[in-house]
Length: 582
Image (cartoon, rainbow, N blue to C red):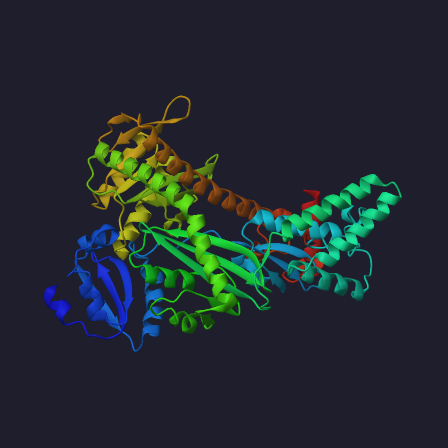
C-alpha cells in the first residue's frame, strides 16, 4: 500500500477505504487527495480514527475537477455504500409542519416533513415536536370554523353544531369568508397573533358582562393557550425572510449542532443533534447540513460558521450560504453556537453514561460467547394469524444500536404453515442474497426461541456453508426471556441485568417490526378478499384500489365520485352498498 500512496495525485476528489473483505468502510473528500490520504498513515491516530486505520486494507480514489464536485460525489458515494465509519446521520425522525390547504374549503393538517410536498397549501414550520404543532392546530380550529372532515361527509356533524365548522358538506359558503379566515390564520402562524388575542379578550369581557362566566372562562383559557404556544417564539431579527442557522460546539469527541429555524424574524423552533461517530469535525458539520435538507424544506438562505469548504454547500443545495462577520445575523449565529454548547452538556453526560453501559454489555456478551468481534447483530422473528399471512422480519443492531436502514421484511410463501419452515425460508433468503451480492455479514445472529429454532437456522447456514455465531433467546414459563441458547444447544442463564436490558430491547424491536408488517399484510389481504366478492372489480382495479386505499374504512369514507376515478359509477355504488351491508 505504500507504493500506492505515493501515486495519489495532489488534486481534489474522494477516497474510499476498504477492509479485508473488500467492503467500503469510509468515504471522505479532500481538496488535496495525496495530503489527506497520507495523513491517516503518517501520523499517530487515536479514538475512532485509529479504529478506522486498523481496518484499512486497501483504498480507491476518484479525482474531481473542483472541491464542490468532491462534496457532491462524497454525498452520492456515502448514500450508495453506507460505510460504517461515516457519521451516523441516518435519523428516521422527521419533524412536523402545519399545512393550511388551498382547497375550496381550507383545512389545517399536521404532516411530517417527508409528506409535506404532497399537499397543496401554505407550509409553516418545522415545529420542534408534534405536541406544539397539535396545540397550535387545536387552538386555531377552536377559533376558526375550518373544514374538519376529510373527505366531506353527507350531513353536518357535531363540529357544525358547536360552531367549529360552517357546514361545508351541506351549505354553500361565501368565498370571502374562507379567504378572510385563510389570511388571518396565515398571520397567526407567522407569529402575528396580537390582533386575535385582542378580539378574544373583547369577546371575553362581553361574556363576563352578560354573566356568562362559563363562556368567559373558556375564552380566557383559549387566550392563554394561544399565548403559551405562540409567544414562546423569540423575535431575533427585523429580517422578514426565512433562514436557518447552524450553530456548532465540539468537546471530548462529541459534536453538537444546533439548528434554529427563523421565519419572518422569529425563532419558530430548533433541532439539536449530537454526533459521536465522526472522524473530522468540518466534514461532519458540512455533511450534516447537506443531509439535513433531505428532511426539511429549503429556506431562502442558511447561516453557518466559517469552516473549510463550507461555501460548497451553496452549490450542492442551490441555496445562498451566509457566513456573517458582524451585525444582527452574527449575533443569531452566536446564539445558535451558545445553544449548541448549553443544550449539549447534559445530553453529553447522558450519552457518555449510556455508551459506557452499552459497551460494557457488548464486552460481557463477547466474553460469554467467546467472540473477538461483535459489531453487527441481526435478529429474526416471524408473525402469523392462525397459520395465515406468514411474514418474517430482520432487524440490525450495530454496537447495540438499531440500524433501521438495514431492516428487512419478508413475505413468506403462502403454502407455509409452521414457524420453523417460515424461519428456514427467511434465513435462506437473507444469506443466499448476501452471498450473491457480497454484502456485509453479521458477527452474530439472534433468533427468538430455543433448540428447535437453533437447529432449523443451523441447517440453513450449513447448507450455505456459512459459519456465523448463532444464539437463541429462550423464554421461561412466565413468558419472560431468561436464557441464551448457544449453537451447541447449551443454555446459559442471563443473570447480567445490564446485558439483559439490551437483549430484551433488541428482542422487543424485532418482534414489533414483524408484528407491524404482519398487520399491514393482513389488512391488505382482508381488503383484497372483500374486493374479490364485488362484481365488476377485476385484478387491475383491485390493484389500483389497494394502492390508493390501504383499508376498508378508507374506502367506506370515500364518495362515489372519488371511487369513480377508478371504477365505473355503478360498480362504485355497488361496492359502497356491499361494504355498508357487511
